[in-house]
Image 1: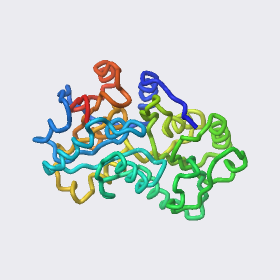
Image 2 (image 1 turned 30 degrees about the horizontal axis):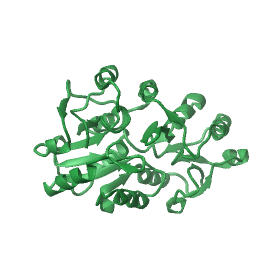
Image 3 (image 1 turned 180 degrees about the horizontal axis):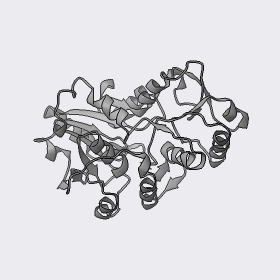
Image 4 (image 1 turned 90 degrees about the horizontal axis):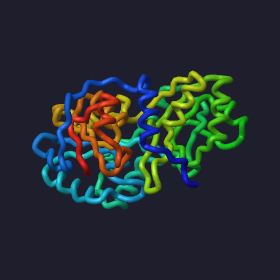
Length: 304
């Protein structure tokens, strides 16, 4: 099933509409332009990398990204993937990155799915969670009682909370069922992927964050988000043993979006790099978007 798609300009406007739900941050006055990440080898020791738009576009690796990361590793740089992709387990994601040619260890992949899983442990163990995900989404690793939200209206009313992992098979009809159910009875909504869209070979796919903010608008429910640009995933990354003693001005978040990667990195107090040639903002007027949003990266790079 091909997911619904959106245009970058439309999504930028939507991100601005929901800005009140996103973190606040301070930014540099201007950005410095570079050609690729290796240009930062003298001033950055740790690179936090987004996946979509930085490592891959859909199921294709970004040209030259494998070689660039190998060069950074040879220079002694630490590299971590911080991804909002929550459709599958971190182990599954690791296999995907390795199939692209990236030689990551399990410790190098930091997934918002795992931060959402940890949050589930703070709720009562008897709760039943309605999960928005594909049937193949490795739900066995979720340490909670779960049921997939599909097309049975009764299921929506019976669950004690909602966990958004993936929108790959989510439909407008199912969104209506969930909206109606939450209007009748508000319950916790946990969103493991706050992204509105993701870059694919065929365009920008609609992601869980898009539907979650729509739910918030229409029901008054306040979703809990567990990925960029929100603090939890950055706190986890900065707590890694290879990172925790590194000064924040020598750590950079690298991504293709202003409202998730750049905003989130800035809110975490680290430096930021916007990639322009592969992801959400490809072919867009970057200076205009930066001026409109006020979200200013430290560096702007054409590619990884």
